[in-house]
Length: 292
Image: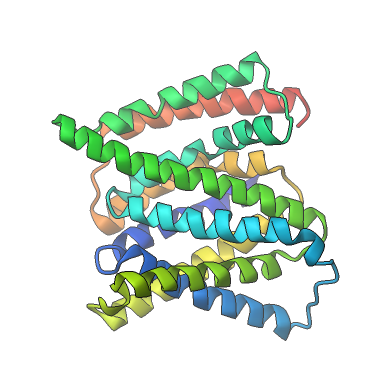
C-alpha cells in the first residue's frame, strides 16, 4: 500500500501541471503533443532493452483498443476539457470517485456482487459529491456551469477506471505495461492532434518554452512514472484497490494547488473529503472482510 500512496503523490502533481498548462494551451493540442511523444519514447525504451511481446496481439486486440480509446484518449480529452474550468484540487477530489465507479462497472459487466454494506458505502460516496458541486456557486447559471464541468470530469473518471480494467486484463495475460502504454498513448496522441488540426488549436502557442517545460514535466511524471508504476502494481493488487488508493489524491492536490497555483481550499473540500473517506473506509473494510 505504501507504494500506491507514493505513486498517487506523483500522480496528483499532474493535475497541477495540467491546470497550469491549460492557462496557455488548448486541451486537445497539449494532450496530443504529450501522448504522441510519450508513446514514441515508451516504445523506443521498450525496444531499446530488447523487449518483445510474445502474446498474440490479435487475440487481445479488443482490450488493447479499449484501453487506447477509452482509458487514454476519451479519459484525457474529457479530463482536460473539464480541468480548464475548475481548480486542480477540485479535480483530484472528483477523481476520488474512481473506486466507486470501478465497483459499479465490475457489478454491471464482470458479474461481481455488491452487498448492502457496499451499496451503503457507494451511496455515502455520492453524497460526498454534493458539497463540491455547491461550492462557490452564487447563482443558478453558475451552478449549471460548475455542474457541467463536474459531470464531464466525472465521465473522464469513468473512462479512466474502465481503462484500468482493460489494462489489468492485458497485464494478467503477460503483456508488458510499457508496450500497452506505448501503443495506447501514441494512438491517443494521433487522435488528439487530429482534433487539434481540425479545430485550429495547434496554431495557438503563446510560449514554446513554456510548452516544452510543461510537456517534459507531465510526460516524465505522468506517462513514464505513474502509468507504468500503476500497470506494474496491477500485477499485485486489484483494479478496485489501485483506484481506492486515490483517496490520497485530494490531500496532495490541495497542497500542490495551494502552493504552486495559489488556489483557495475552502471548507467544501474538507466536507467532501471527510464524507468520501468514510465511504471509502466502509467499502475497503468490506473488501477485506470478503477477502478481495
